[in-house]
Amino acid sequence: MQEHLHSNTRWVRTAFVALSAAGLIGLLAASGCINPEVVETSSSHEGSAAEDSAAASARRLAAQNLKPAIAAPGDVLIAGGVDASNRSIASAEFFNPSSGQFVLTGIMESGRAGISAAPLSPTQVLLAGGFSGVATIKNFSLNLDGKILSSAESFDETTGVFSPTAAMGTPRMGFTATELNNGKVLIAGGLDNHDNILDTAELYDPAARKFVTVANTMSDRRMFQTATLLLSGKVLIAGGANNLAGETTNTADIYDPATNSFTPATFPMDHQRAAHTATLFTSGPAAGKVLIAGGVGGSGFFFKDSSAELYDPASQEFVLLSSFMNEPRSMQTATLLDDGNVLLAGGFSGTVAVTGGLLSGASGLISNSAETFDPSTGDFTCVGGFNTDTLRCNQSMSAARAGHTATLLATGPQPHRVLIAGGIGATDPVAHGKALASAELFNPASGGSFTATAPMSIARALQTATLLR
Image (cartoon, rainbow, N blue to C red; front, top):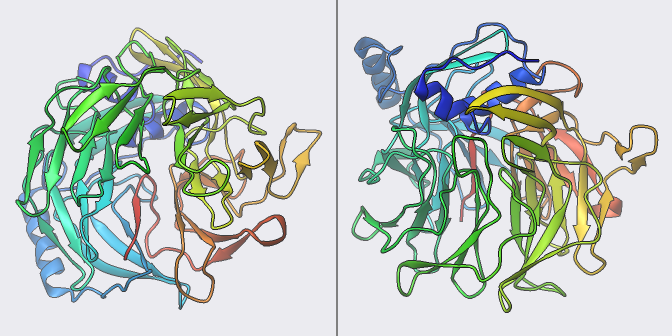
């Protein structure tokens, strides 16, 4: 497979990583997981050539005339993403654990795909950045026409309304957003509108309603890294893609809110990783440590990775585990369960080649399996058992998913369960994928099982999911 992305620099910088909103679509198209026909995405009034002023005015008028449904603490806010026709969307909805239903709520000011969200207060959520524009896929080739956003907005669960906030200092996509213990939000890394992978960060102050630049830069440029709030209140920033040649990094940084600055971690990760997961253990034998799992890594060739390692804040060391996941996963979800185990669900199991900054090939499948990690034993166990014929976990989810969301529920008749929603995929993992409206609940009891729940109102992939407090 040697079909290449078109050579315009904007397309190159978005698609080479193949992990961004449109880049993920490109990766899955190249891997045969998305039907390689022409598909177009359109989105917000900001930066979208496809949406004219009349359409934008009509959408705003519709939003004004719609009385949004009001969410409650314990509900899960699902916002933005791309729909089944790969059109970026501004709509939002919430999952009500008591009824098991999704309910549409307010509409964002901008359509956003691949955005990041973080709680601002007990009743508000910050949504920032992301890509807004038009994408076309044909014959395994991806073109983008749009803009990476600097704008941000907040959702108020007491009214169901989105309101604009101050803009970020730099447009970003593929960045991380982390709520700090002081109520501020750390925005780090990502890709800007000038083809730059960023080593900068900024801090959103909800009291002042503005973004402030962090005092210094990270030790490396990062896109699709992870950010984990440690028990100390500091933030571990690890891995990511760091240039347009298709390279990933194993470096890490520690952000200290007391000084508003970064310090390079004493030791790097054992593996280079991007699109991996990071999960903090809050109690038990690994309390304070962080499980880093999966992703893709390499230089010029993104190798699939089934390895995992533990970060110890006391020594700042990353220790590679002797046990591996039962199959490689990237763009999966990782959720700390109430019993102290970690659920790793879905993801892309494949390999991506990058040549001269261009995506030149990908192969693999989207996964409909899941597994759990037990920190007391250090073992990964397939949900539903291991298949000795395929050498993978048995299919246990109702759909194969990548770029989905996973949220541990705290209220309702089924607490302790995990809501898995949307993503790109299909019921059959070898079928061509598209954004899914389906959702399911993971029940950790008796080894774990998945049960389909009511679907979302709109098919979504690369959306955000935030547990409301």
